[in-house]
Figure 1 (cartoon, rainbow, N blue to C red):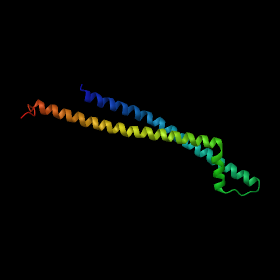
Figure 2 (figure 1 turned 120 degrees about the vertical axis):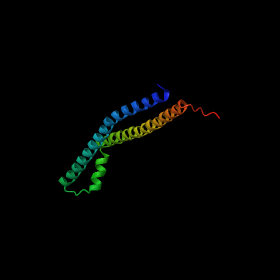
Figure 3 (figure 1 turned 120 degrees about the horizontal axis):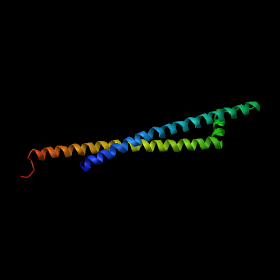
Figure 4 (figure 1 turned 60 degrees about the vertical axis):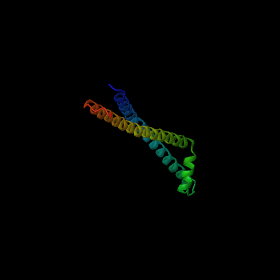
Length: 126
């Protein structure tokens, strides 16, 4: 087996592994996003309810600000951003590997065409 074919196989296997890993990475990013949004919404509602019990009318903007200042919500937001960045990085790696597989296929096809050309008796010498 030629080095070019081995390289194609290597890229294809790496692409397959990365694609399999991506589903877990994407799932974790989605879970982190949902967890953050749920906690934030609960905190907004709790802040508005607390204000209403005290007889104060709390604006939604004020409740959002208070919710975002909560340490738990902030930690969940950080986890959300981090997992989204990891998912984006993994997605870009998949795009890169897919391109590398395509390039390797082209090189293998070119090698095969050159071998067929030389096998037909054409050497390229004048």
